[in-house]
Length: 302
Image (cartoon, rainbow, N blue to C red):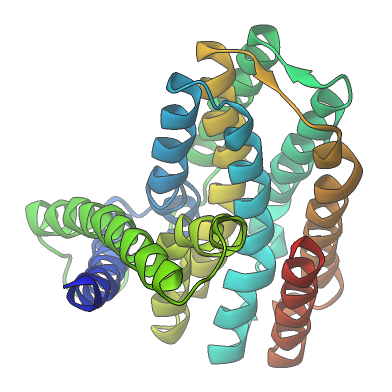
């Protein structure tokens, strides 16, 4: 039964990612919104739903520290693992002219989080500041997005596009839950420790929607959605998820987050920004480099 759940979760992720990319692309074309804006908002925030659910549950059950590890670990995985795999599958174009504000918000979110972690506590005031950052990011994304030129292809049915987008999001969330639960059960049956399960399967599991969506977008040559998905997700993880969780309850932070994990998060973010500025693309060789760095990060935690 466990293996059936694993396969069902995997199929739900694939179907959900396909539906989300197709639906979001249709919405973008109908409203002549840049696919980058859709990737940054609907897709990026939607695929962060598992991280939001995990963090809120942790806060409400007296384990708020899990929210920090969830956000930091997911942001590192989004860049090194997800963009790494996506770039190996198909080199990703990074339209820096369209994304310089978005990269700025991602860097600002990372810096704010690091500063807030230094005193060992992310309080409600910190949460309010982070949440205001989310509002600012959303306003910037929609009001500064470029209008796409009209093409000759027929416009999609809006009810169908929205149904595919929402259905895709539901499929991603349900698929991620099934996959994480079943994979954890399988790992225990092979004698893998709870610590390794938490650091690997659960951390990567909450990023599976981003992984599935970005790979499908890359293979469909929707590279703006693939990159925007990761950038939008990273911004939402800090401003939205951590901000919301801190507003509910102050979050105590272990020293290792500021001393170790944030260093990896900063390095991953800096590498992505440098690739965008210097190369304007994420080629296969750099994707392999990202994956190598992620393997080193996992090895360091083990």
